[in-house]
Length: 474
Image 1 (cartoon, rainbow, N blue to C red):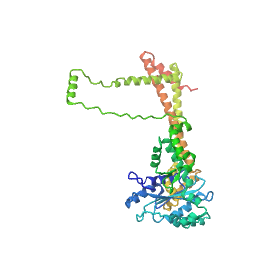
Image 2: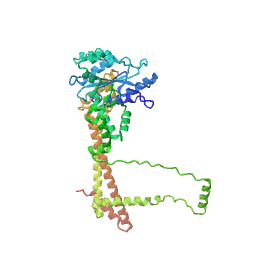
Image 3: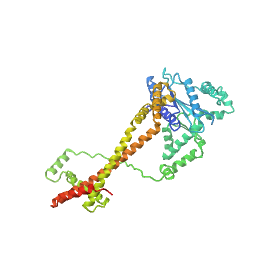
Image 4: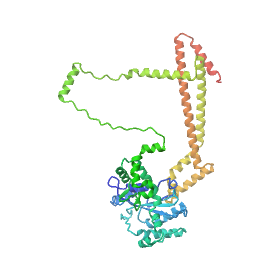
């Protein structure tokens, strides 16, 4: 991985680490390992090593792919072989992350390591022929231990004489790994570019090296050789790419693959600063103000109508309440208030029941919370980091405690989610009933007040309310 310049030297290194550690390709991170660093913070540790020895620029790192014959090895075995290879080849000097991808028909592993040694600050140097001289013999020996196929490569001349050299070269460069990624990036740039030159610039921004001769060739960060675009398919020759840039864009793609959606349109407006008044202009406008030709703009008068607006909103809510419950008399209003009062008690009781049921499972939730805290350590231990042995033992204890109570980790998490949703629904129902009851009581209080002001018997109205509240709701 080369240097991207002063703005972000390690851009290609960071991108390669993010690509190889994709959870979707590594069984949610299970097939990820590291040596001399932690996988989660590998880039920061590599960057710190570069700073320590004053070598933050130039070559940033290296990317090795170990490819296995189709259907010959399972992901776990490939992970073991890769781990042993990294420990033997890089373990004493360099920080490295190694992963296994099982999302293709060929199980393969990626190794990304720092260009600077954390021991003495020396930079890794790859010479032509080092693969056949140093790297391939290690992989051959490890594959023989597991009964897998090997490649007989002694030196550079032997490579070209080997009758299966073409196949060996494809495995070495991982063309079956890179093809899909290159096509995906080409498609993205074709859709977004307005012309061929912008297309090339966007590819370059993604870290690609571009070579234009008779054929357009590209090399993504981490790949050792250029790849002719036309070998990726008929849709990727230079002529077809130029045609696709004209025909295809984001709107074209949206029409072909998804229903039309509303989009936000941004408009840039150039604003000019108003020129300041000169001294003479200021005196002139001051004189106009003094003689009454100019007047200050009046202050906002919204505050005068604030109470009227609130009253209007309250009256609208009361009208809608009467309409919802089809209320035409004081007796009907009293009956609705009585019914809402009972409903409020029911919703409160339901909320209390859910809360108590959730509290009975508080111990289970506490165990799950503790397991969540030590989960990163447990993952590191499962990748072979014995430093977290104590956390692993505690994880097993907590897992056994859940099992003794008849639950698994996923079941407890589902139970907590269930209680959370149920409690939220109960609270929402209680708030809705309370709001409705408050509106009804407000109408009733106004009705009582109007009746009293008209000289009618207040005791009669109170008796109506008491009788209605005592009657069962049907």
